[in-house]
Amino acid sequence: MDGMGEEGDSIAAVGALGDPTRRKVYDLVVASGRSVSRDEVAQGLGVARTLAAFHLDKLVEAGLLEVGYARLANRPPGPGAGRPAKLYRRSESQVAVSLPPRSYVEVGSLLAEAVERSGADLTLQRVAHERGRAAAGEDMWEVLREWGYEPFERDAEICLRNCPFHALAQEFPPLICGMNLALLSGLAEGAGWPVTARMSPEKGQCCVTLSKEEER
Image (spheres, rainbow, N blue to C red):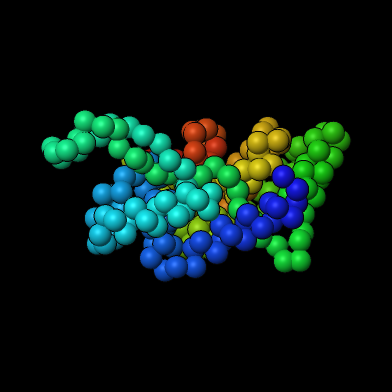
């Protein structure tokens, strides 16, 4: 697909979120961090199942959600109870709109390749660590949200549902993941947060996890 087509698709995807209810549906699916059913969305937003299904399918058409099927153990008895349920999750495709068009991902790819070829990985990590320390504020959660990490707590860990550098991390995993680890380590250190940034790759999440340090 050419660049103009991709830009048009992205604009259509962003436009699909213009409806307030549809945006709430999308936010609920994203916040769940897993595949959800129409019934879960309807109950979570307090809307009719048919309305939830309408907006979910519109988000699929826009490329913002993906569909899967699975049998639900807690599905109520009745007609169709034995059939796999239609489930929705956030699409792995990336949506970006820039008017006029800008190719920041392409520039990022060129810079990453230059760093990799020149063997400047450690320099990049030092700069990332310093940037993290400099950006640290009192509210670490707010900083993580602003940077697009979508943090959430799980047991004694702070997990990051989204990787802001996903496209580049796919192309240059060691380089970008190492930079990401250094950035978050610097952020935690600068904020005095009792967490340790560590590599913990998990499908559908950022490769870095912030593990809470045990109180002494």
